[in-house]
Amino acid sequence: MKTNVLLPFLLLILLAIQACQTVPGTGRRQLNAFSTGQAIQMGEEAYPELLKGAKIVTSGPEYEMVQRVGQRISRSANRLYPDPSRQFDWEFKLVDDPKMVNAWALPGGKCAVYTGLLPVTQDEDSLAAVMGHEAAHAIASHGTERMTTSIGLQGGLAVVSGILTGQVDDPGKRDLILGALGAGATVGVALPFSRANESEADELGLYIAANAGYDPEAAIGLWERMGKASGGQGPPEWLSTHPSETTRIQRLQEAMPKAKRYQRRAQRRN
Image 1 (cartoon, one colour):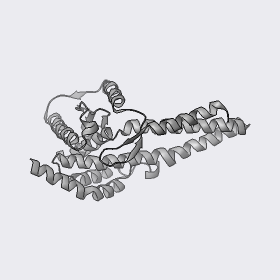
Image 2: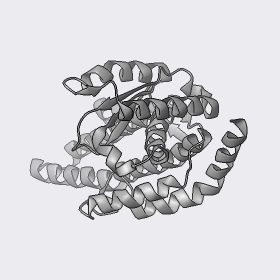
Image 3: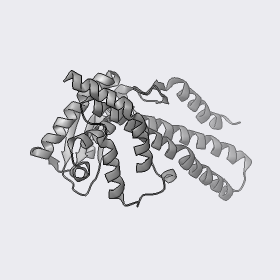
Image 4: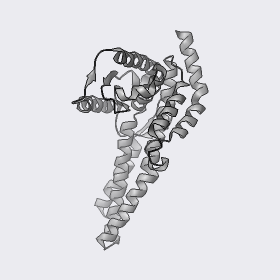
């Protein structure tokens, strides 16, 4: 095997050796080539770029609600998962976009909620479920974990491409094989991996919201409304980056007893 074929393979082995981390709250071992400090820096750099041109709401009842929920969510995250949460500089923006039913969080706790989400959440408990979910993505380092997985898949395809160059003379056939392998990697690895990240964020986010004193049962009604709002227009689950609403509700119900215990602790603490 040629050196230029071996190099990506050796880099993948080195990455796997050096990049093992543990997800707070679940104990899942993950491959992540980026440190917490690097992730926080990337989040700080990306935040103003993602908000460039956005209409930021800075006053009013909806703004105050987002700030209130955000403060409780960040304090809860710091209590439950201090490493890495206490390293974050939590910040919550409300973006005026009635058509955008979305929220997100970057590494380091830089978060945004769009006004289009609020008619679906309807109340603070449901909003806390969403914001807890997004905070969980940052705490679990899902963004940089996905980047690491993408690097690994690209490296694996590069190895296969190098092998095929020496084994298959027809360029068209090589491209066909690589295309099939790329599609298989997407459906068989990348998409299931993304759905697993979403389920993990659902679970951790439920605990964060409950530990902040919010009713975890609100997450069930939230995803029922999300399902109605989508109208079944999304792709089938196996072709989606997210679990279906039915799957999410089932897994949230499984996590509910533990979430209820967090809620009772919060009630006693308050």
